[in-house]
Length: 244
Image 1: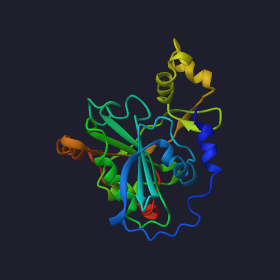
Image 2 (image 1 turned 30 degrees about the horizontal axis):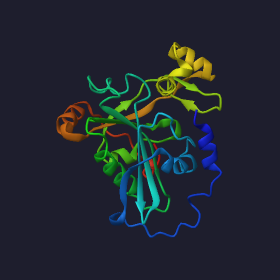
Image 3 (image 1 turned 45 degrees about the vertical axis):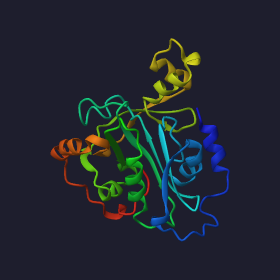
Image 4 (image 1 turned 180 degrees about the vertical axis):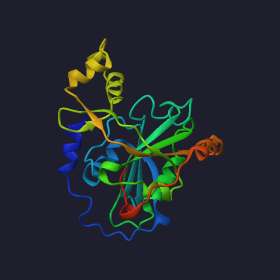
């Protein structure tokens, strides 16, 4: 429902033109921002070309007020995203890292720097963060390995949807739209909302799943994750991945 904003963002001047900063991470500030502030970076720099409508927290990394990186967190693709990792976690106390962008001129450790700083800035109630590396893009999650996330194996194949513009969206997004537009979708089931929006179901491919504990209970959470963790998949040619 915000694809028009994405299309507008792609028509703006590229972030990669006339970039003259000598990036020094000691001078970079990561702070919470509005989705609008990082949208152009995500839709022009991320392989998906889409800023997720379900974004709950957006963070920008700035040097001299120039955006050099961005991260976005959301409620998870479905109701089992977090509870399947540790029982008791849901979208109220956990987040999925759903987008990450780093300017190509930035140092190789910029991605892990942004992730680490943004994890500390999440709401106090958040104790678990889950993220996925897209095997369909030949990503193994080298960034998350460098940031000490725990590897939990491959996700199962599941149902996702393709919206009317051809963009893949999660099943849970229908509920986000219902909450944001109760007058439009009042009395509709999630299935009816998806039909109204013209979504088509598709089988999603498996993804590498990573998780980490954050906040005041991160030690106990990470202890649980460590007991489930598997050996990292081989990074190979993906050692410089910069996108979720």
